Amino acid sequence: MLRVKACGLSDVGMTRVHNEDCFALESAHQLFVVADGMGGHSHGEIASRIAVDTIRDFVIGGNGQSSPPTADEARLRPHSHVLASAIRLAHGKVLAAIGRDSRLQGMGTTVAGVLVDGSVAAVAHVGDSRVYRARGGKLELLTQDHTWVNEQVVAGFLSEEQARVHPLKNVVTRALGGESEVEVDVREVQLAPGDVYLLCSDGLTTMLSDPEIERHLLVRRPLEETCQKLVQEANGHGGVDNITIVLVQVDEA
Ligand code: CA
Image (cartoon, rainbow, N blue to C red; front, top):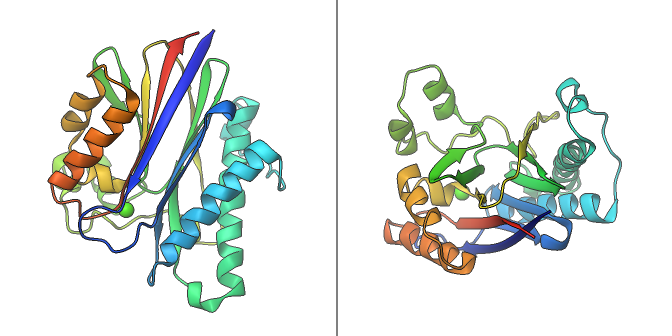
């Protein structure tokens, strides 16, 4: 039997006035979500809050209509489809909020979510919020950013380090609240004792490189301390954006 414990921390950073990130930590239901809102006049706050609340209400409360699984999801376990459905529902709710109030036009949010069932975690995302796993002394990125710069990395035109500091690094190619349909990336990973999963907004990953993040995750200390150290270091490097972190540790029960 595996057991997960988690902690989360969100920080406004050093230069922003508002924190437009949002996260959910539902350890009893093994649901973990990070959302990073965007839009003028702090409307990003509204979008990320709608996303997190909708996903939580759907996964835990069963509120809302499930969408038909995509061909890929049909090959996955039911809880992966639940998480992807929740994210599509959240997209619809963000669009509906914009439809009701034209001042919210242009708001949107990224999302990264993990839902654990038994020994399998569903990992889903839209946009540039990420999920990493630290296992066996190595950090591995489990998600592929939906950004223009990442498309350039995949095509071989930019290195990952060039992408991380590129002036167009913030241009996302998918977001909740964007185009009428949203494509959710979802995959499954097998949990193992000792794994640590990190969900984060880009306020962490634009300030810290993967090796810098890895260094923190490989130190055995209370999760709360690791969260604080990561935020401190991101702020130490400038903290130009909101920083949100959720850490999930897997242990033998
Ligand atoms: Ca951000």
